[in-house]
Image (cartoon, rainbow, N blue to C red):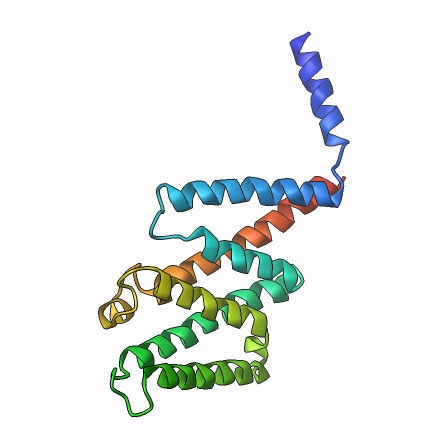
Length: 190
């Protein structure tokens, strides 16, 4: 009798699909829960949930397709690199700079952001929002985490370096976006 119930239940489930919003909500929620477990548990300090969910959302905002997948990863990491260069330049500005540190910092960021946006003329770097997200995530990490905006951190080969930790989190986030879209598609397809 139990085998009949299981077979009947399986048959019922195989012929039932969710609507797109429900399927996407469940796939994103389940994967977000798993990602959170890893970010605050075994991968704490090596994977940041906030640096994964931003490119995860960007993947959907850019179309949730193969172009969005490649563009989000490439441009987000390009933003990380541009922020890393900016940070390295900023830590080398003397506190008694002729124009003062605040103005030198503003000029450095202005030039870096202009270059980053102009780089969108290169097709592989055309997703400016993803580049800005990568840039912003890097500075969020550097400015909000004590002792990270230093030469030792920026030049170090470790997960303290934003080139490593933010980029790894970006890649994981975009893959989570792709997986959540695929899972939702599977749940909505008969």
